[in-house]
Length: 209
Image 1 (cartoon, rainbow, N blue to C red):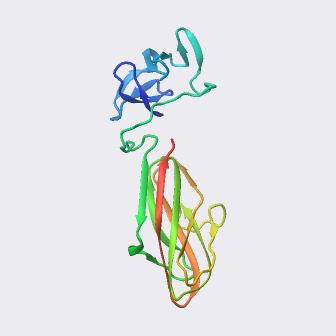
Image 2: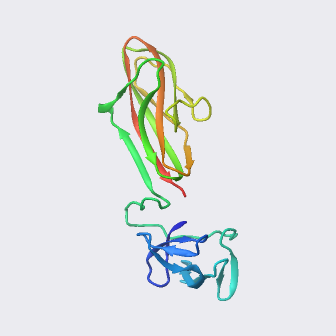
Image 3: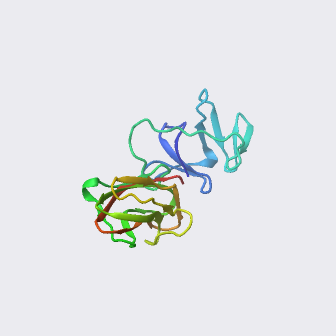
């Protein structure tokens, strides 16, 4: 489903679904059928027609929707607003401030924060910051997870020892691709003796499809 193209009929922002041969507006209402629908290509307002299988302009076939060699451009927003839930570009975030640090127990997995994401394909990013109070640190790890358990491969990141200076890490991007609602956790585990360690940070997620 593609968000943000302009219709030639009323210049609404529409989502086009080639598998269903329909176009929907932002409220999810079907407004047109591809078999009789046209849209502007953004270059001189040339009308491009969709006949259910191919794109064509002026009777010339441009290519199959799924394999159009030169790609297809869709208008972005300039409204500084948020994408509707379920649409490409949907954004979610969770922030734990330094005033609300999560207290860690040595050699025990702690959840810094989490995001519950609806079915779809999401890019998830995050960072963790640590505060130390008289702690003797020997190491640690951090990762994203959809089970609440630290991953032992892929997203696991080694965290160095630092008992006196506060520090932080940025995790590699994580892909959550599922057919149902999923909770993604931002996790960490530190090994230390004496003192205490707190953790805080931010998670963000962007729906890519």
